[in-house]
Amino acid sequence: MADPQLAAGLQAMIGKINTDTWPTIGQSGEKVLVRKFQHDNLVTRRDALKERLNLVEELLAKLGAGEDIDIDKLAVDGTVKDDKDADLSEKDKDPIKDKTVEPVAP
Image (spheres, rainbow, N blue to C red):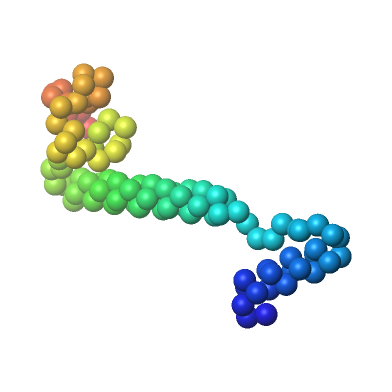
C-alpha cells in the first residue's frame, strides 16, 4: 500500500479480527524522538571533532613549513580554546606554557 497510515490501520483491524485483541502497530513516538536526539547529538560531536582536527592539521602544516604557531589555541586536552576560556582555573592551564626550551645540538 502507498499509504502507511492506512496500511497500519488495516493491519490493526486484521489483528483484532484474528486474535480478538488489538495488536501493537508501529513505534511509540518516544523511541523515535530519543533516536533523533541521539543522532543529532552525535552529528554535533562529530562536527566539533572535525573542526578541532582541522585546526591541529593546520598547526602541524605550519610547523612543518617552519612557521611559528599559536599553540595557545589548543587547550591541554587538545580542544580548541575560545575567547570565553580566558579565565581558566589553575588546573586547566597549560603546565608547559611560558617554559623556555633549550635547543638540542645535533
